[in-house]
Amino acid sequence: MQTRFIRPRELSSTKTRPGRWPVSTGTLWRWVAAGILPPPIKLGPQVVAWPVEVIEAYEAAQTAAVSSNTTLQKAVTASVAARQARRAAKEAT
Image: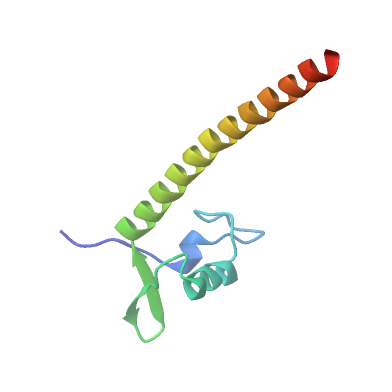
């Protein structure tokens, strides 16, 4: 089976063309430079792309991170609410 690839212009968006992600091509390259996104594979002299599996794995990791952040946010919110309730009870006495 042949590997499918996604080119930077398919991932990035412009004002006139939506891409897979709502980011510019420049942002993709900044993410590569920062190590957030793995470097693409060079397919030709002026053609680079990521295997679809790499992009899907990145998206899955981001989704997992968002859900764990949501869980963390709920825990922090509950902790803050409990602290405020204790403070209010203490001030009432």
